[in-house]
Length: 255
Figure 1 (tube, rainbow, N blue to C red):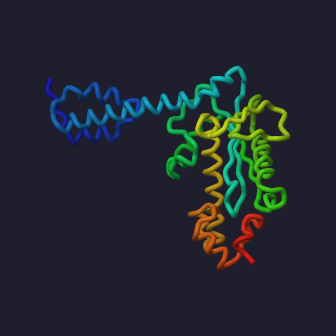
Figure 2: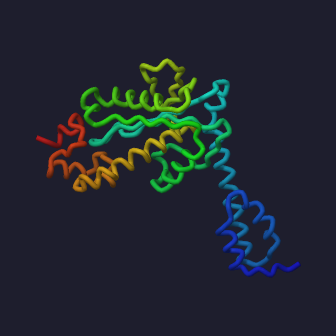
Figure 3: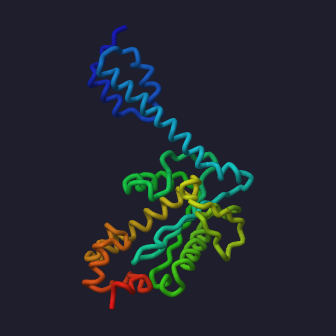
């Protein structure tokens, strides 16, 4: 039977097509000989292939979650904000369901701000538990950034609504915690749970810095997130430090 739908109608269907509907779209229109429809089917096939690659990548990122599946509650931990000249260091401790497969989760540094924001909402909607630790610029100056990072991570774990029996950490072993820990070098790119924690930590801190930007607009905190961009350093030299600058980080830029 000849298809009575116009190419424009089919194109609109493709635009509205969700990932789980791609195969149905292909099956429905693959025998339509019209050039425009053939192009849409080819696009759908390409999108489906890309989706399957992404699913395979996510399975690879579950290597450590599978390896330690004997543990009841596996928690991923990551932090953001070690390097900036201003603002806090923020850590996230995160527990995902065992069957969790959130596509496109990756090391937060490899994602656009828009993608991090959308994934942040998806991660929080399905997480079994989330804890956030935040250590201020004053505390960083007092005890140094490494110790402040450990403190933020311990705080994040303490704020989890459930008790983990295994921690998957991005590279470090956190002192002062009795629970078993597995440090993974570049863990935010190798473990789904650590990567998800890195996204939540990054979005949390970025939002904080955007708020600080409204208080101290001359430093462009919304743009640089407190890191030492050329514009940021120039502002420090021109205006001096503001209340959230880490004094131990900016000695080269102030008298």
